[in-house]
Amino acid sequence: MNRRLPLILVAGVLALCVIGVIVVGATAGSGFGAVAYTVDDARVSQLSVNDDLAVLADHPKLASGVFGVDPFATTAGAVSSTGAASWLTLRIELDILRAAPGAKPSASDLSAARKNLLSQLQSSPTVRRDFLALPSSLQDAFVEINVYSAAAQASPARNRQLSRAIKRAHVTVDPKYGFWNAKRLAVCPPTGCPAPSASAAAGG
View 1 (cartoon, one colour):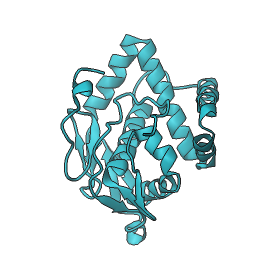
View 2 (cartoon, rainbow, N blue to C red):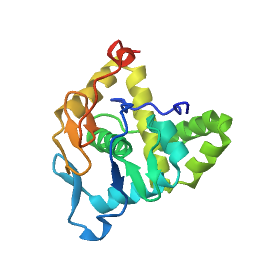
View 3 (tube, rainbow, N blue to C red):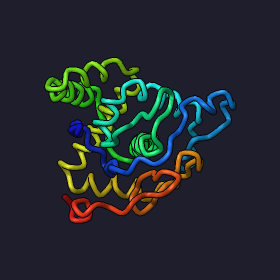
View 4 (cartoon, helix red, strand yellow):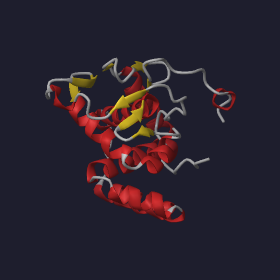
């Protein structure tokens, strides 16, 4: 069983059941106008999301460890619908947090978080290599979400502020990826989110 990597999301990436697949790149040629999701007035293209999923599909051990979804990639060029929903959850959370009021991570904050993450990944050389092989934009996303999470854990007031920002955001998701669950603050696969596990329900 893969151990979850030390990446903690503010709202939490749910360990969901793998149901169905999303074929990476199937809609990449449908034009930039195809929208994967919106956060308030901001629109993010399917092309951008599918490009991310294609990269993560090439590094399934890393992706499975980060999101607790195994398998993350099902076959060549295909990502589980749960894996896709987990990645969209991270992207949406990060978009919301970047726009939220309050102090933004400084360059030194991000640098320190990156060094800490790489240090933690020393025990998993293959996963560390996979992380370093990602495009800088994906590496930065993983690092930045950890900075926000650390800030939320360190300050109850900041935690409440960030949680309110996520709860207040108006989010829509293209049904092919799933749907935004405002109660869980996460994207659920098209077939829906399974019931929380007993440990999750107990806060474990």
